[in-house]
Length: 131
Ligand SMILES: Nc1ccn([C@H]2C[C@H](O)[C@@H](COP(=O)(O)OP(=O)(O)OP(=O)(O)O)O2)c(=O)n1
Image (cartoon, rainbow, N blue to C red; front, side):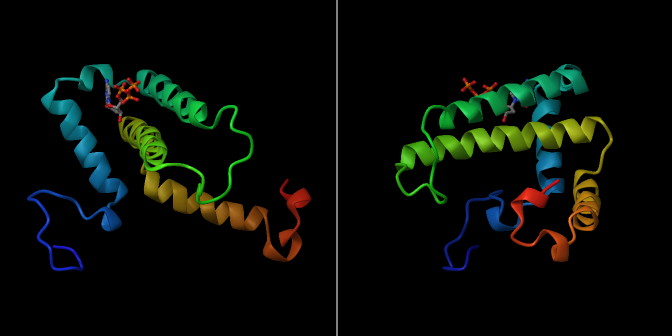
């Protein structure tokens, strides 16, 4: 059920509440029922991930700088972008899973390290300090 009282289809995830754990479980099931676990080795997934990053890059290729919010893009272009971003996310989540890395924890821990490395008082409005 969403905020407007409309009933969502059975099994529909609330996109606003989707978690890395949800995605991880769905990807495990996706591979399991297809007997694709055997192909989802770390190396294969990494190569697939890089391939999808390439497809994502192609969307921006030769466009010049693009305004935030993509005001000049049509709905089909934005949908395509969402698909390629999703492919990158899904392969990343799957790669972390088969490597035994808790991606949520790892990302939180990395955010903390980033905050120590780039203290606000030294970095605020200083793009040249970004390393
Ligand atoms: N062995 C595979 C193949 C696909 N997928 C899933 C993860 C990605 O989300 C998506 C990738 O599918 P495609 O390789 O068909 O890539 P695209 O959807 O980008 O299609 P295309 O490359 O034709 O644009 O499917 C997967 O988990 N394992």
